[in-house]
Image 1 (cartoon, rainbow, N blue to C red):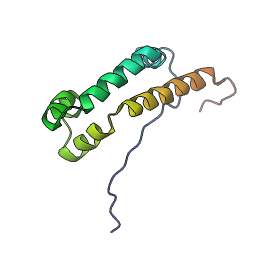
Image 2: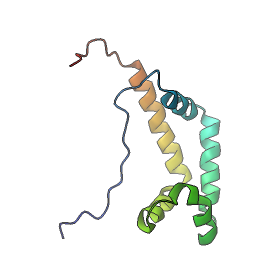
Image 3: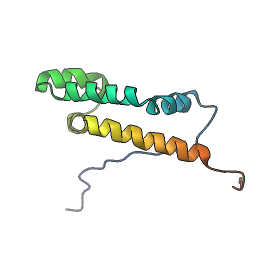
Length: 107
């Protein structure tokens, strides 16, 4: 069929807003490697729980989702995924912060 069966993706920032409390907070978090590894380990532990307990542990994240996206999110939440997401965020913040926008035209 021509139907789309699923889409997975992450939306990157286009620019870093130095005045954004949320962006500054996220940037600080992804730069603290021990914290990233701790969160990844906790997610790995929770992901290894049997079905009912795993669903219960991830309910704060997946509670408002329908069953298929919630199942996909629970399968995606693995230690390697968390570390990879933090690495992508860290490199994105670093690259965009170092970007010289003085030559860009404003419309």
